Image 1: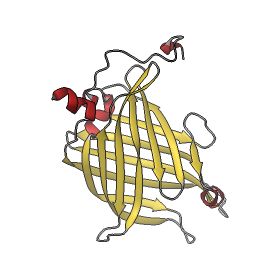
Image 2: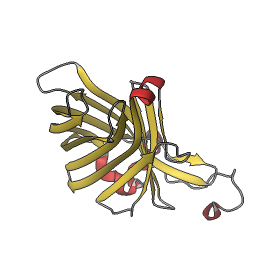
Image 3: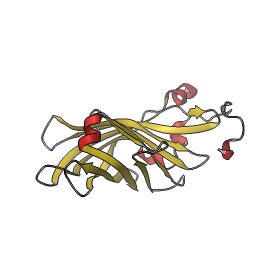
Image 4: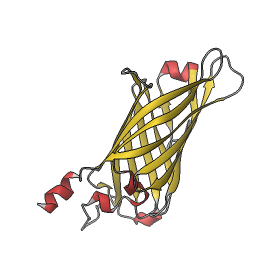
Length: 213
């Protein structure tokens, strides 16, 4: 906490309200993306299932966020996944990607409508084109929480996602969620990977739009 000083209450002055200009390694992600070559490997009773999927991700800038002297810039995101040629939702996920310019800390919050959430953390330089965040069951700083059925039957013990910016309008991710499945001796690596292309630009955050007016 020494980098913040003794005063834990006073917020920074003269904050730049243009989130898009202060996102560090997250800046290339701003906008709407689509990918049709996703691959999910998930646990089933008779062994791993390899499932292709189609995905859209929307990353939109939010206003700067202050915790006393700490200042964060970020993107609100929504992931929507279907199986090829189908309408029914295969996976839905919401949360925030956050960047702290003063320390290089990256955070991802994640919530899914099956009763699970987590906070993942990592470090990256402002100009990094590859970065990752991770979470561990039991941590109070980058932890994982699950409702009772998931905790008993498909316990998540760790999570890691790697992002690679592959150009102005292209990025890929590789995700590994380690599960302890009831009745199985070995942990299961539930993996997801996809490459996406930008299909629309971002909408500037409310304070930046107001300042432009």
